[in-house]
Amino acid sequence: MKFSHILFSHLTPEWRAHYIDYDALKVLVYKMVSQDWTKKDEDDLDQLIPPVDEDKQTEFFDEIQRQLDGVNSFYRGT
Image (cartoon, rainbow, N blue to C red; front, side):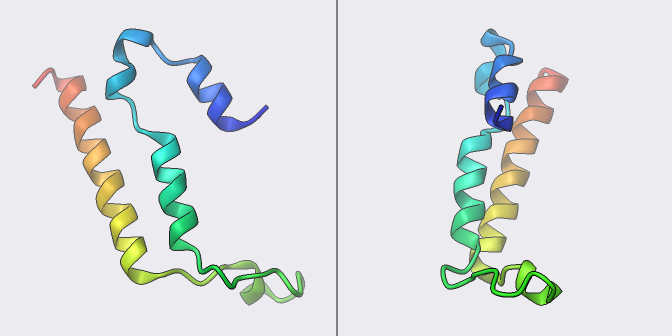
């Protein structure tokens, strides 16, 4: 079973709007990874770690911070 299905099956419905948006973050991760990356030689560690677009990486971390701030605000009741 995929992680997203497990995650969604455990959501509290009335709090759904306050959870981290896993799907949106996953899209940003795919955008961050260079399109020309392929695992050519699995013995070469450099080939297993995809190069990332620095601007997209910043966008991802900004978005995850925004979402975490929203979760924390909801949790604190503010």
